[in-house]
Length: 170
Image (cartoon, rainbow, N blue to C red):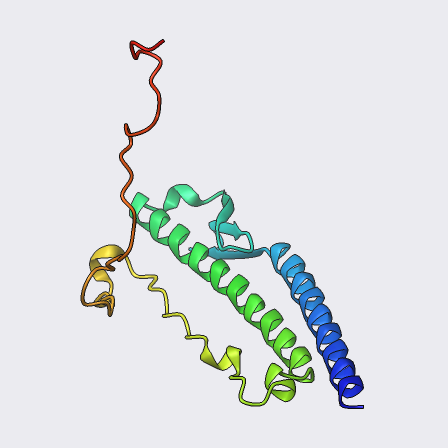
């Protein structure tokens, strides 16, 4: 009886996992299709970005010559950042919809008591600055005080046991 319940629970868990993976793949496909367009400088500069926030098209309006190079550069930067912000907002909305959809699914801890909530363990990524390099806030230091040290590693001699075609044994 216990084995039947455990087997049924495991089957439910695997079905939930399969549904979750399918939902993630669906959201990834939707996110990959996202684009956004933004304009600046009185619509004299228009920029389109893809789902990753990469500029894929830049257009200048008929009065672009009224702007200085510095104004054009600032307008391109502003429009690109605005369009990228739109894409990232839509991505957040897609992910939030996925989270809500998956919140109805059982957690591993429902089947394995004491199992931690893996999602709660994931750290939040830091906010990425859009300021130019000289105007960025202080960089976050890596918390590692010392470099990684590998113990038990085997050092290979690159010329060691390999044969060489120029050896006299040929």
